[in-house]
Image 1 (tube, rainbow, N blue to C red):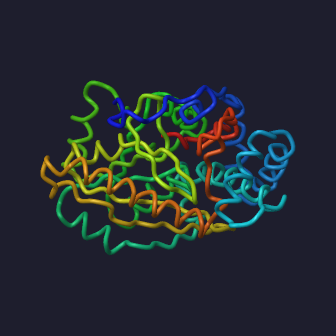
Image 2: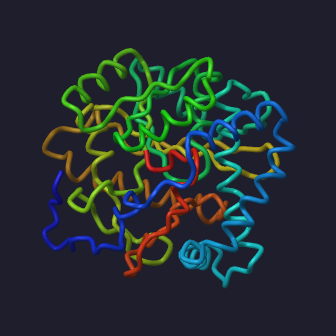
Length: 328
């Protein structure tokens, strides 16, 4: 989709969608080894390894540290210390590591609190599914597990092909008993399949804080004190499906604790076509407001390690660490 905002600048080589041009770190062999060690030796032992991995990135990823410092300065409201930066990397590594257990069906290892569950149940009580709009913050996998366990519904991920490939690599390494379902965005039958799943009562999960390419439609929104561009595509999909859009975020809060947030954004089933554009842009701004709230309350959960505010530098490859699906 091309932007409806003529003034929107084309991306420089080092900004925004260039995050997906970075080489993968890791391999299928490494993923299988990580999965084997984690599942055989347990989470406490795995967390020791995570500290080693986090220390490596802390020492040898200077560009990532630079972008991390800029983000943390905004989220914390002060100059981040070395301990803040290390905790940021460790939180990212932990969310990936915990995904191994969640995909393997070991949800009993985690303590999950939920905000907004009554509102989510009210949405589902209408007999049709909803579109869940998350971000590269915390763990999306905890949403799928809790959705199945508490609400009794399935979560189907809508993903771009590149990110579906990354997820497939992790699934091959873990071989989960109940692998997640995903539908590729941009394929000829994508919307038909998504609509079918909604009609069956499923939740459609998407990440809505990155543009996939430089031509994707977006709007400028104030985020953590400065302007950043957020894509319109995911919200447009919710509108085209005439589905309720719900903000979701699974925040990692240390130890084995996660906090899951549901917040309604817009019910597009009630929006007439003439008012759809305004409703989409309003919902995106509401999404950004809620995302900012999460970044301020739990600042180490942000995993966009690149030039998010388009300040003219090339992005880091840290975001594409082994097993990450943060660009779904």
